[in-house]
Image (tube, rainbow, N blue to C red; front, side, top):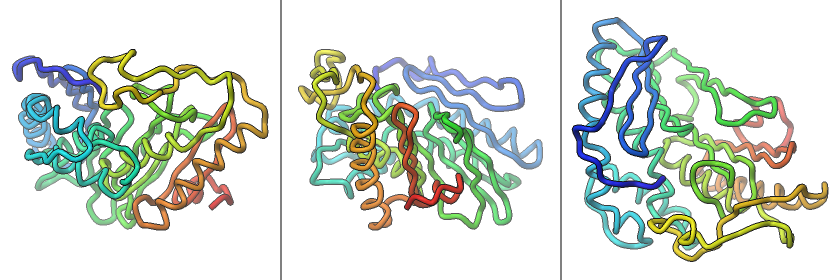
Length: 284
């Protein structure tokens, strides 16, 4: 996500059809919803709108540190981002890999309060969830291919869902059309989805890549080559790329960093962990 510095007064909060809350400020675009007693919902939306108004300003203030691998950060959201990416090092990753999930978590925290039974904040497909005991939510995913939603119950450890890939709004070093990850937090899911998507890769002369800085001057990826086009791959090439990503996802799951992942490439997919159970897939 590219960030700039519009003033806090430019943040927009509005109700949309169905009673959801739409929050938009610069590149941040969130749809949030709380469930419970009507007065409690109104209070939740007021809290979320008030908190959202200053989030972009806080992030922009620390942008140089957030685009660095090892510069200390200060703000609450920035610290959440840094903590989410730390377990994936020594591979290259900056706190920016967790920005969308961390922002969703911050908005969600403002939504939760007395009288609220469940809530979510969906930041462009990176989703933070809160569920009271006995509650559940069915979440739409930013992918298709027969797997477009996931049900999360209060008894499940999952509280974050994130999707990454070369076709998404952020850069990717890999060739996955999409990778969806479920984890204990949205920031952790966001960082993990980035890393798994980077791992979905195969050597092929037809894959187009360009230095990230040539596409967007303010990127945290510098001169690293990011994917800009992927030709139709042979079945064995798709399998090789997906298996590489699946190995990364399963390694993260073994370490307790994620609960599950689904990897998509040119009509094929690999699934592991909680998402394998969701789809009835035997993989993982």
